Image (cartoon, rainbow, N blue to C red):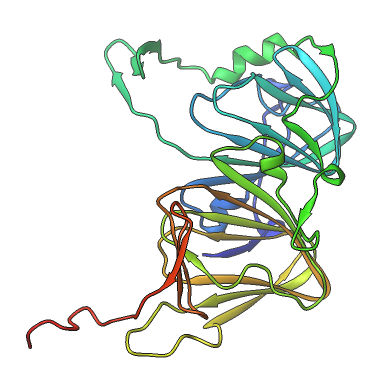
Length: 314
């Protein structure tokens, strides 16, 4: 699966006995077919806490507020966030959580899915996690966190990892805003693209190592999927298939599919969030122009597509 609408994604609610932890969660990227990325849509009622305060050792998280408001808690300091704000949490950064504001909160949560090595000792319920040994609990870890309630916090100003959409300058005439980079993202990227009517986003392309997830937030348009390169043939001029897009659609494009993608706006324009990894080993192929982009080298060139046995003895 490549495409899903969030109205068709069955969500789940955090059980009442874990309050004030709560919210209605939808695993959007999973349903769209993502492999190595997560993208969740979470809706909180006033006073609900999205997760226990936590930090990640190697993964990076990016939150984008779609609607409502919340209190952002980071290592005991708090500030207000609202629609259009982006929050970046680098690996090893401050412990953090969000608490729904008076009008509730609708937020998209983007993150990597890295798998750390662990070794479990089943007889003693102990696991090695990196260089530390930890006890494996039978109860859900959130149960103990729920008993602690909402953490105390000291109100303060915004930190550099919190950015408002209006404060981010756009590229390409203002249509593309690198909101993840503006908040200090290093391992991943989140861009907000606002295409005017009947325009093309990034040219059709596919990645060898990077994975991307797109979430449409306004307007309408078309997802184009282009076929793989073929030896001894001219570059492609038309997509292999197309799919209509509207607000709420989620597109997953795993790495290494050989199928290029492109998003085009319709008559009402198209606004979407583009989330993806930043692998320096990624190679990007553009089927329409037959270009290759070695992104870690900053080199773009063209190669001649050949059959596997080309030049070999018959």
